[in-house]
Image (cartoon, rainbow, N blue to C red; front, side):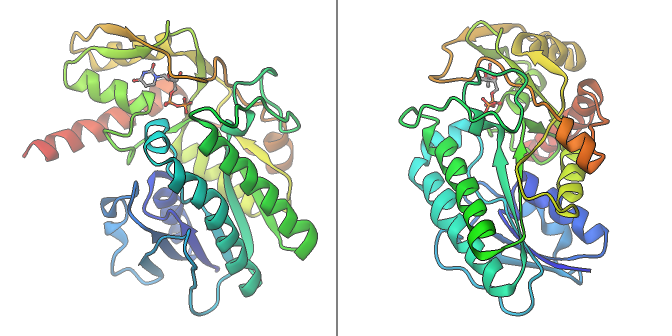
Length: 315
Ligand code: UDP
Protein backbone atom coordinates (compact mmCIF):
# COMPACT_ATOMS: atom_id res chain seq x y z
CA UNK A 1 0.00 0.00 0.00
CA UNK A 2 1.43 3.36 -1.05
CA UNK A 3 0.53 6.98 -0.35
CA UNK A 4 0.35 8.65 -3.73
CA UNK A 5 0.19 12.38 -4.49
CA UNK A 6 -1.53 13.09 -7.82
CA UNK A 7 -1.16 16.62 -9.15
CA UNK A 8 -4.13 17.39 -11.36
CA UNK A 9 -5.99 14.87 -9.22
CA UNK A 10 -9.41 16.37 -10.04
CA UNK A 11 -8.82 16.29 -13.79
CA UNK A 12 -10.03 13.79 -16.36
CA UNK A 13 -7.05 11.43 -16.12
CA UNK A 14 -5.94 12.34 -12.58
CA UNK A 15 -9.35 11.49 -11.12
CA UNK A 16 -9.60 8.13 -12.91
CA UNK A 17 -6.07 7.36 -11.78
CA UNK A 18 -7.00 8.20 -8.18
CA UNK A 19 -9.98 5.84 -8.37
CA UNK A 20 -7.79 3.01 -9.69
CA UNK A 21 -5.21 3.53 -6.94
CA UNK A 22 -7.87 3.62 -4.20
CA UNK A 23 -9.40 0.49 -5.70
CA UNK A 24 -6.14 -1.40 -5.25
CA UNK A 25 -5.71 -0.19 -1.67
CA UNK A 26 -3.37 2.77 -2.11
CA UNK A 27 -3.93 6.14 -0.44
CA UNK A 28 -4.44 9.19 -2.62
CA UNK A 29 -3.71 12.88 -2.09
CA UNK A 30 -5.38 14.64 -5.02
CA UNK A 31 -3.93 18.11 -5.59
CA UNK A 32 -5.61 20.48 -8.03
CA UNK A 33 -6.22 24.20 -8.48
CA UNK A 34 -9.47 23.43 -10.33
CA UNK A 35 -8.57 25.53 -13.38
CA UNK A 36 -9.58 22.67 -15.68
CA UNK A 37 -10.16 20.01 -13.02
CA UNK A 38 -13.61 19.71 -11.43
CA UNK A 39 -14.75 18.62 -7.97
CA UNK A 40 -17.52 16.56 -9.57
CA UNK A 41 -14.81 14.15 -10.77
CA UNK A 42 -13.72 13.36 -7.21
CA UNK A 43 -16.66 14.10 -4.92
CA UNK A 44 -17.58 10.39 -4.77
CA UNK A 45 -14.28 9.95 -2.86
CA UNK A 46 -14.87 12.71 -0.30
CA UNK A 47 -15.00 11.21 3.19
CA UNK A 48 -13.39 7.92 2.10
CA UNK A 49 -10.50 6.65 4.17
CA UNK A 50 -7.31 7.09 2.23
CA UNK A 51 -8.50 10.04 0.12
CA UNK A 52 -7.53 13.67 0.62
CA UNK A 53 -8.10 16.67 -1.62
CA UNK A 54 -5.77 19.67 -1.53
CA UNK A 55 -6.73 22.80 -3.46
CA UNK A 56 -3.33 24.09 -4.57
CA UNK A 57 -1.50 25.41 -7.61
CA UNK A 58 1.53 23.17 -8.07
CA UNK A 59 3.34 25.91 -9.98
CA UNK A 60 3.76 27.51 -6.56
CA UNK A 61 5.76 25.87 -3.79
CA UNK A 62 4.05 22.63 -2.80
CA UNK A 63 4.32 20.55 0.32
CA UNK A 64 2.50 17.50 1.64
CA UNK A 65 2.95 16.57 5.29
CA UNK A 66 3.67 12.95 6.19
CA UNK A 67 5.00 10.03 4.27
CA UNK A 68 4.73 10.07 0.46
CA UNK A 69 5.69 7.04 -1.62
CA UNK A 70 4.82 8.25 -5.12
CA UNK A 71 4.30 11.63 -6.82
CA UNK A 72 2.38 11.47 -10.10
CA UNK A 73 2.46 14.77 -12.00
CA UNK A 74 -0.71 15.11 -14.08
CA UNK A 75 -1.49 18.80 -13.57
CA UNK A 76 -1.72 20.78 -16.82
CA UNK A 77 -4.25 22.23 -19.20
CA UNK A 78 -4.29 19.46 -21.83
CA UNK A 79 -6.77 20.46 -24.50
CA UNK A 80 -5.60 22.74 -27.33
CA UNK A 81 -8.30 25.33 -26.55
CA UNK A 82 -7.23 25.38 -22.89
CA UNK A 83 -3.55 25.79 -23.49
CA UNK A 84 -4.20 28.40 -26.17
CA UNK A 85 -6.19 30.34 -23.59
CA UNK A 86 -3.67 29.76 -20.78
CA UNK A 87 -0.26 29.52 -22.46
CA UNK A 88 1.66 30.96 -19.52
CA UNK A 89 -0.01 28.75 -16.89
CA UNK A 90 0.64 25.80 -19.20
CA UNK A 91 4.33 26.65 -19.44
CA UNK A 92 4.51 27.28 -15.69
CA UNK A 93 2.90 24.01 -14.64
CA UNK A 94 5.11 22.07 -17.06
CA UNK A 95 8.28 23.79 -15.84
CA UNK A 96 7.93 25.23 -12.30
CA UNK A 97 5.21 22.69 -11.47
CA UNK A 98 7.33 19.78 -12.67
CA UNK A 99 10.32 21.11 -10.73
CA UNK A 100 8.22 21.44 -7.55
CA UNK A 101 6.72 17.98 -7.96
CA UNK A 102 10.19 16.50 -8.52
CA UNK A 103 11.44 18.38 -5.46
CA UNK A 104 8.64 16.90 -3.35
CA UNK A 105 9.46 13.39 -4.61
CA UNK A 106 13.16 13.89 -3.86
CA UNK A 107 12.51 15.27 -0.36
CA UNK A 108 10.22 12.33 0.44
CA UNK A 109 12.36 9.67 -1.21
CA UNK A 110 9.33 8.93 -3.41
CA UNK A 111 8.99 7.53 -6.90
CA UNK A 112 8.11 10.16 -9.53
CA UNK A 113 5.76 9.58 -12.47
CA UNK A 114 5.56 12.18 -15.25
CA UNK A 115 2.47 12.45 -17.44
CA UNK A 116 3.95 13.37 -20.80
CA UNK A 117 2.26 13.35 -24.16
CA UNK A 118 2.35 12.32 -27.79
CA UNK A 119 2.58 16.09 -28.44
CA UNK A 120 6.32 15.79 -27.76
CA UNK A 121 6.43 14.30 -31.29
CA UNK A 122 4.79 17.47 -32.67
CA UNK A 123 3.65 17.02 -36.28
CA UNK A 124 5.52 13.73 -36.65
CA UNK A 125 7.62 12.79 -39.67
CA UNK A 126 7.96 9.22 -38.38
CA UNK A 127 4.83 7.08 -38.41
CA UNK A 128 3.89 5.30 -36.20
CA UNK A 129 5.80 7.13 -33.48
CA UNK A 130 8.44 5.14 -31.59
CA UNK A 131 9.84 6.42 -28.31
CA UNK A 132 13.25 7.04 -29.87
CA UNK A 133 11.81 9.56 -32.36
CA UNK A 134 12.80 13.11 -31.28
CA UNK A 135 9.82 14.83 -32.81
CA UNK A 136 8.99 17.77 -35.02
CA UNK A 137 7.80 20.60 -32.79
CA UNK A 138 7.40 24.30 -33.57
CA UNK A 139 8.56 25.93 -30.33
CA UNK A 140 7.03 29.32 -31.11
CA UNK A 141 3.73 28.13 -32.62
CA UNK A 142 0.43 28.14 -30.69
CA UNK A 143 0.95 24.57 -29.43
CA UNK A 144 4.55 25.26 -28.42
CA UNK A 145 3.55 26.20 -24.85
CA UNK A 146 2.24 22.69 -24.22
CA UNK A 147 4.67 20.69 -26.34
CA UNK A 148 7.78 22.42 -25.05
CA UNK A 149 6.59 22.39 -21.43
CA UNK A 150 6.16 18.63 -21.67
CA UNK A 151 9.52 18.20 -23.42
CA UNK A 152 11.12 20.27 -20.66
CA UNK A 153 9.30 18.10 -18.08
CA UNK A 154 10.78 14.98 -19.63
CA UNK A 155 14.28 16.52 -19.63
CA UNK A 156 13.90 17.62 -16.00
CA UNK A 157 12.61 14.20 -14.97
CA UNK A 158 15.58 12.48 -16.63
CA UNK A 159 17.99 14.95 -14.98
CA UNK A 160 16.56 14.12 -11.54
CA UNK A 161 16.92 10.46 -12.41
CA UNK A 162 20.52 10.63 -13.60
CA UNK A 163 21.77 13.38 -11.28
CA UNK A 164 19.82 12.65 -8.08
CA UNK A 165 19.12 8.96 -8.61
CA UNK A 166 15.37 9.57 -8.34
CA UNK A 167 13.26 6.59 -9.37
CA UNK A 168 11.28 8.05 -12.27
CA UNK A 169 8.76 7.05 -14.95
CA UNK A 170 7.65 8.94 -18.06
CA UNK A 171 4.47 8.03 -19.92
CA UNK A 172 3.66 9.51 -23.33
CA UNK A 173 -0.11 9.65 -23.43
CA UNK A 174 -1.95 9.49 -26.76
CA UNK A 175 -5.46 10.95 -27.35
CA UNK A 176 -7.54 9.54 -24.52
CA UNK A 177 -11.32 9.79 -24.19
CA UNK A 178 -14.05 8.61 -21.87
CA UNK A 179 -16.35 9.65 -19.04
CA UNK A 180 -15.35 12.86 -17.16
CA UNK A 181 -14.14 14.70 -20.23
CA UNK A 182 -15.67 18.14 -20.03
CA UNK A 183 -18.48 18.83 -22.52
CA UNK A 184 -16.79 22.11 -23.47
CA UNK A 185 -13.29 20.64 -23.37
CA UNK A 186 -12.83 21.38 -27.08
CA UNK A 187 -11.34 18.04 -28.00
CA UNK A 188 -12.65 16.17 -30.95
CA UNK A 189 -14.35 13.24 -29.19
CA UNK A 190 -16.20 15.40 -26.65
CA UNK A 191 -17.05 18.05 -29.26
CA UNK A 192 -18.50 15.53 -31.71
CA UNK A 193 -20.51 13.63 -29.10
CA UNK A 194 -21.95 16.78 -27.49
CA UNK A 195 -22.73 18.28 -30.90
CA UNK A 196 -24.47 15.08 -32.03
CA UNK A 197 -26.45 14.76 -28.78
CA UNK A 198 -27.61 18.36 -29.18
CA UNK A 199 -28.61 17.71 -32.80
CA UNK A 200 -25.98 20.16 -34.05
CA UNK A 201 -23.66 19.63 -36.98
CA UNK A 202 -20.22 18.22 -36.24
CA UNK A 203 -17.33 20.66 -36.68
CA UNK A 204 -14.53 19.10 -38.73
CA UNK A 205 -11.35 21.18 -38.75
CA UNK A 206 -9.52 21.00 -42.08
CA UNK A 207 -10.68 18.37 -44.57
CA UNK A 208 -10.94 15.63 -41.94
CA UNK A 209 -8.10 13.55 -43.41
CA UNK A 210 -5.82 14.08 -40.39
CA UNK A 211 -5.58 11.03 -38.14
CA UNK A 212 -5.57 10.24 -34.43
CA UNK A 213 -5.50 6.96 -32.51
CA UNK A 214 -8.01 7.09 -29.67
CA UNK A 215 -7.47 5.31 -26.37
CA UNK A 216 -10.29 4.54 -23.95
CA UNK A 217 -9.55 5.90 -20.48
CA UNK A 218 -9.71 2.52 -18.67
CA UNK A 219 -7.00 1.12 -20.97
CA UNK A 220 -4.87 4.21 -20.49
CA UNK A 221 -5.08 4.04 -16.67
CA UNK A 222 -4.21 0.33 -16.72
CA UNK A 223 -1.12 1.27 -18.72
CA UNK A 224 -0.14 3.93 -16.15
CA UNK A 225 -0.29 1.40 -13.32
CA UNK A 226 1.71 -1.17 -15.30
CA UNK A 227 4.39 1.44 -15.96
CA UNK A 228 4.36 2.66 -12.37
CA UNK A 229 4.92 -0.88 -11.12
CA UNK A 230 7.70 -1.55 -13.66
CA UNK A 231 11.31 -0.41 -13.46
CA UNK A 232 11.45 1.46 -16.77
CA UNK A 233 12.88 4.97 -16.45
CA UNK A 234 12.79 5.90 -20.13
CA UNK A 235 9.60 7.18 -21.86
CA UNK A 236 6.90 4.67 -22.80
CA UNK A 237 4.05 5.26 -25.28
CA UNK A 238 0.65 4.25 -23.95
CA UNK A 239 -2.04 4.46 -26.61
CA UNK A 240 -4.31 2.54 -28.91
CA UNK A 241 -2.83 1.67 -32.31
CA UNK A 242 -6.08 1.81 -34.26
CA UNK A 243 -5.82 4.95 -36.34
CA UNK A 244 -8.84 6.87 -37.65
CA UNK A 245 -9.27 9.94 -39.79
CA UNK A 246 -11.32 12.69 -38.15
CA UNK A 247 -13.94 12.16 -40.91
CA UNK A 248 -14.20 8.48 -39.93
CA UNK A 249 -14.71 9.48 -36.30
CA UNK A 250 -17.45 11.95 -37.33
CA UNK A 251 -19.19 9.21 -39.33
CA UNK A 252 -19.07 6.79 -36.42
CA UNK A 253 -20.40 9.32 -33.90
CA UNK A 254 -23.27 10.44 -36.16
CA UNK A 255 -24.18 6.80 -36.80
CA UNK A 256 -24.12 5.93 -33.09
CA UNK A 257 -25.96 9.02 -31.79
CA UNK A 258 -28.26 9.21 -34.82
CA UNK A 259 -29.88 12.62 -34.38
CA UNK A 260 -29.48 13.60 -38.03
CA UNK A 261 -26.35 15.72 -37.55
CA UNK A 262 -24.35 16.63 -40.65
CA UNK A 263 -20.76 17.86 -40.74
CA UNK A 264 -19.42 21.37 -41.36
CA UNK A 265 -15.84 22.22 -42.31
CA UNK A 266 -13.70 24.83 -40.52
CA UNK A 267 -10.11 26.06 -40.69
CA UNK A 268 -7.48 23.62 -39.52
CA UNK A 269 -5.76 25.02 -36.39
CA UNK A 270 -2.13 26.14 -36.90
CA UNK A 271 0.39 23.30 -36.47
CA UNK A 272 -2.35 20.68 -36.08
CA UNK A 273 -0.53 17.33 -36.48
CA UNK A 274 -1.54 15.51 -39.68
CA UNK A 275 -1.07 12.01 -38.29
CA UNK A 276 -0.61 10.31 -34.95
CA UNK A 277 -0.32 6.67 -33.99
CA UNK A 278 1.81 5.10 -31.27
CA UNK A 279 4.23 2.26 -31.73
CA UNK A 280 3.56 0.29 -28.54
CA UNK A 281 6.14 -2.46 -28.92
CA UNK A 282 7.91 -1.24 -25.79
CA UNK A 283 4.75 -1.29 -23.64
CA UNK A 284 3.78 -4.71 -25.03
CA UNK A 285 7.18 -6.25 -24.42
CA UNK A 286 8.15 -4.64 -21.12
CA UNK A 287 4.79 -4.04 -19.43
CA UNK A 288 2.69 -6.77 -21.02
CA UNK A 289 0.20 -3.95 -21.72
CA UNK A 290 -2.04 -3.48 -24.70
CA UNK A 291 -5.38 -1.77 -25.22
CA UNK A 292 -8.51 -3.91 -25.14
CA UNK A 293 -11.35 -1.42 -25.67
CA UNK A 294 -11.96 -0.55 -29.28
CA UNK A 295 -13.41 2.74 -30.48
CA UNK A 296 -17.07 1.76 -30.89
CA UNK A 297 -17.25 0.24 -27.42
CA UNK A 298 -15.43 3.14 -25.78
CA UNK A 299 -17.67 5.62 -27.58
CA UNK A 300 -20.76 3.80 -26.29
CA UNK A 301 -19.65 4.40 -22.69
CA UNK A 302 -18.67 7.99 -23.44
CA UNK A 303 -21.92 8.79 -25.24
CA UNK A 304 -23.83 7.34 -22.26
CA UNK A 305 -21.85 9.57 -19.90
CA UNK A 306 -22.51 12.74 -21.90
CA UNK A 307 -26.17 11.89 -22.40
CA UNK A 308 -26.61 11.73 -18.62
CA UNK A 309 -24.48 14.81 -17.97
CA UNK A 310 -26.36 16.94 -20.47
CA UNK A 311 -29.74 15.87 -19.07
CA UNK A 312 -28.55 16.64 -15.49
CA UNK A 313 -27.26 20.02 -16.57
CA UNK A 314 -30.55 20.78 -18.32
CA UNK A 315 -32.49 20.22 -15.06
N1 UDP B 1 -10.90 18.56 -34.40
C1 UDP B 1 -11.98 18.67 -35.24
N2 UDP B 1 -13.14 19.19 -34.75
C2 UDP B 1 -13.29 19.56 -33.45
C3 UDP B 1 -12.19 19.41 -32.58
C4 UDP B 1 -11.00 18.91 -33.08
O1 UDP B 1 -11.91 18.34 -36.43
O2 UDP B 1 -14.39 20.01 -33.08
C5 UDP B 1 -9.67 17.96 -34.93
C6 UDP B 1 -8.39 18.74 -34.58
O3 UDP B 1 -8.14 19.74 -35.54
C7 UDP B 1 -7.35 17.62 -34.62
C8 UDP B 1 -8.12 16.39 -34.13
O4 UDP B 1 -9.49 16.70 -34.32
O5 UDP B 1 -6.92 17.39 -35.93
C9 UDP B 1 -7.87 16.07 -32.68
O6 UDP B 1 -8.07 17.22 -31.93
P1 UDP B 1 -8.04 17.26 -30.36
O7 UDP B 1 -8.18 18.68 -29.94
O8 UDP B 1 -9.03 16.29 -29.83
O9 UDP B 1 -6.62 16.69 -29.94
P2 UDP B 1 -5.12 16.93 -30.47
O10 UDP B 1 -5.12 17.85 -31.63
O11 UDP B 1 -4.42 17.47 -29.29
O12 UDP B 1 -4.70 15.57 -30.86
